[in-house]
Length: 319
Ligand code: GZL
Image: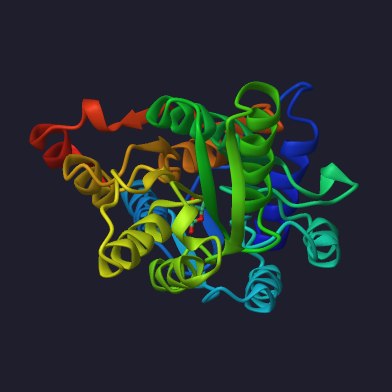
């Protein structure tokens, strides 16, 4: 069977998955994956998980690193369509701007899976499912942790993630909702994007400290660990003690954040699991077998608090 017919068969399986259930195709799969870039420790771990799982399962993975440029992602997806891959998966840098290319994938009968981040489209038939975290809940958890670590009173500087990205929009939304509903003593006095990058987080926090409100900042909410780690460098360079003069909470749970918690510089890191490879390829295998798949798969996550971190837990980290 030609790849076009195989792709159509796969897409047809997706469309009638809930029905009689067709005999799944046998043989290897070709999957096109478009990655946002390599902006953070989380992203590096996510890429390693996707590539490692494809390798373990003998899946042919066409992997494209967009280097943080949405146009590169769109070009890569168009290329996957021209190559007639069996499935397209991607982590959309930002929520908007995907309608046209997703319609082209649908016309080509190639199923699309969203991993990590969501897209903003009216027609949700343009993708099979979205596997990723609940970023609003992560924002709420960060607020609760900051309230615990500050006794419910803080003047907060916020380092936001990439503008227009689902994690930045929703982590802010969840955090602010929790402050409004439960923590009146927590106030955001500065807020700017550090683009999920360590160097940019350091630069922005240096500017925060130099601002008129700088001396009154008592806490930092960073949308990811890399920006928090950059801010810690800025705080120490200004002669202040991270974790004491400025209480810090962030999101992801990468290895360096565990080190910062062990060093007493970070109060907590809200877990955001990057190891999506096994779930992604389990899902693709289910599609291949003609089994129904849920429209939304939320990764199970918790919160890592400084009090829980030991040398043993640090050594045991997978990422
Ligand atoms: C979250 C992911 C975010 C991480 C950042 O699922 O999209 O992007 O929190 C990463 O570290 O850059």
